[in-house]
Image (tube, rainbow, N blue to C red; front, top):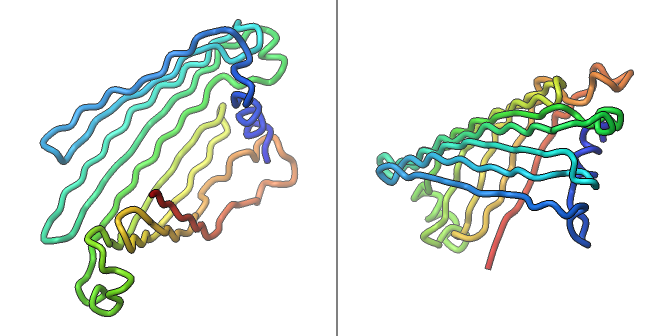
Length: 199
């Protein structure tokens, strides 16, 4: 784990509550256009240190487009986010970064071929069953420590409320290398598997 990743972890709220008495503001506003395009924005602002002297401001914008053409579902989505850390002399001395920012874009093509439904009717019999091919690109800048990755994958949804995702992450530039000697050729390529369900 890199030093900057550790700083992010240490910034999480403890189970016992916030570390200061300040009030944070969060929210999201979104607009839907013609049922196929959604544009949104969200924010968070509040103090992050124990004395409540420094403000963390996070702003994000996102867009998602979805359309069905001839039984094939097409999707395109993306998001850009910026986190700015206010820093007094103590925060600078503790190594608190100035800002993080990044963005991603993802395209998807999905559907359920009738041949596959007939081949495995007990697996893909639900109306929400779907197989989707996904391609995602991520880029981040963690206080001038840049990284990017391309992630092609496939999601299999046998029923509407359960999805399995298989993908392979191709790291173009690995974050956390600038201040870690001996890791100049380190990369994070590898398979990713996840499952999500609700009931």
